[in-house]
Amino acid sequence: MPVYSVSLRSGSSGNSAFIRTESAGLALDLGMTGRQYALALESLGESADGVDGILLTHEHIDHSSGIGVVMRRHKTPLYATLGTYRALLPFLGKIDESLVRIIEPGQSFSIRETVITPFSIPHDAADPVGFRIHTKAGDIGVATDLGHFSQTVREALTGCRIVHLEANFDPDMLETGSYPPSLKKRIAGSDGHLSNQESGMAASWLIRNGTESLFLSHLSEENNLPPLALRTVCSYLDQTGARAGEDYVIQVAPRYSCSRPMLCQDPFSEYVPGQGFPGQQLTLPLIGDL
Ligand SMILES: [Zn+2]
Ligand SMILES: [Zn+2]
Image 1 (cartoon, rainbow, N blue to C red):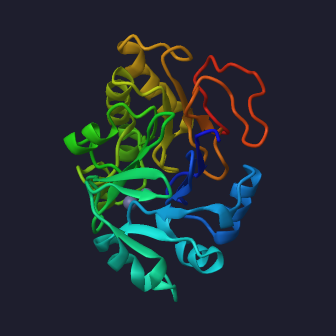
Image 2 (tube, rainbow, N blue to C red):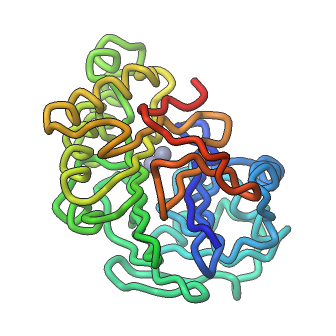
């Protein structure tokens, strides 16, 4: 079974990703309606009933709005820290509590044969985490909603073959934009979100340490533009001498549609779930559907 990762939705309007490992189908956050989620999975040849667990990074609504519905409709277990679960509970509706699995940062757990390590991330939520999903084809890391690229996050993502990394805002657009000063401060703060420049520095470090494939995730609709995020991050990668299409592939995760799936075994080849390889070699950075 090919191991791959795909973004289903990305941005403050909703975030969700799907990862297929050798043994499990995993949803990463679920900030979309139950119907959108099921249709997105269907378009990949997957099924919502076949998802073995929802891994939740934190309780913010753009990551969690569809969880209650999906737990009721598809009986999918939820994996969340105690702080996240408590903060989310009032918004979940009636759920079967036997589907809830409480996890702790730094404590690995398994879903089927797949080992997953949650790690703490700096963000203004109850007890937010990122995830490292271990597979035989290489590891996949998820770290969106990052106030800064902390030492813990850096260590947790080292050597991940594929990484979903936040590139939330352009500092000039944020500064001159319409948000109130308090919100601007929150976004740019060390427990807020990652700027394109900070994302570029983090990406450079990751590519130098074994990462081959990057999703730029959670772009702000007000304070960023997909080509700007991509250009900024790639300019940092250029400075390290990393060559697009040879040393790495990169794509901006689209806001309202699925990204191109990234195949863990070979991030440089295009992969279509259910159809295998069309034989096309990826040679350029990918912008995704802008
Ligand atoms: Zn958040
Ligand atoms: Zn968010």
